[in-house]
Length: 307
Image (tube, rainbow, N blue to C red; front, top):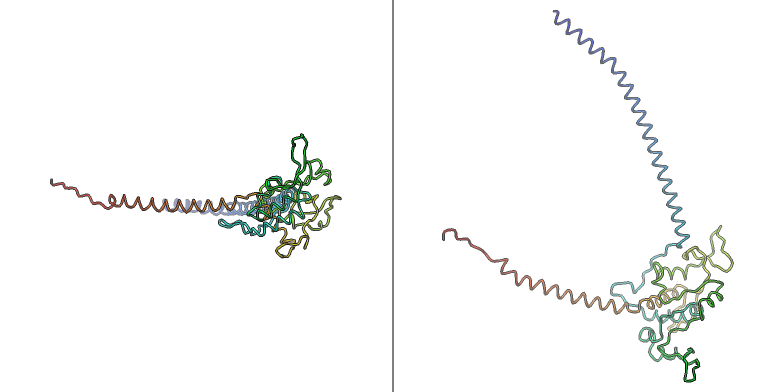
């Protein structure tokens, strides 16, 4: 009986301690839940603020990049960009006509000779007749003096200005770049040149353009000294193709692409020939390997442990 009473007292004390501890633990649990909920709210607010800040900074960087480098150019499906595609030579001829009648008054192409056009856009007779229309300063002659002569196939396309100073003076301080390698000298060259030529528009509200400049979102800074040069029916094509702004832009970019990379067709053809020959060599090597190793791989070894 004494042992039973002791056991009952111990059980009462344990139950009492549990009943006292339960409210305390529940208070701590509720307090922790409130703290966790508050910290979760703070964490969510912090993440939201970081996201908004990142978005604003990204838009600011994008705007600054657009102002510095110009609007991103669309990607156009140029017919000569394929692995086995070649230039549209009719388009190159029309592009040369656009260059002669529109671009050559300001821009030079100092790396292109008349003989380079033979077999690409003109016959030899047409190129000779075209070269004979210009006068080239040559010499000295037997008397030590310079003289002028009609152009010939080995001459380069004429330059509109004698030097850079004359070019800047005639264009209000701006220097028209040489177009021989322009599609290689600019990022996303072909698309950039086409977008630049056809991208002139009125400046948006709040944008003021200095006098003598023109708004073009594809040009770095948005203000370019060159006015809009391509207008519908600005030239009359020899083959009767309608000379729209987009057509002239496409043709002159095709001509400039050829001028920057005249060996492209030969390079692609040579690459295709090499790939074909290497494929034949690979097949021959595979057959030779199978022929030589088939005997060794199919042989059967028998181990005679008795003898």
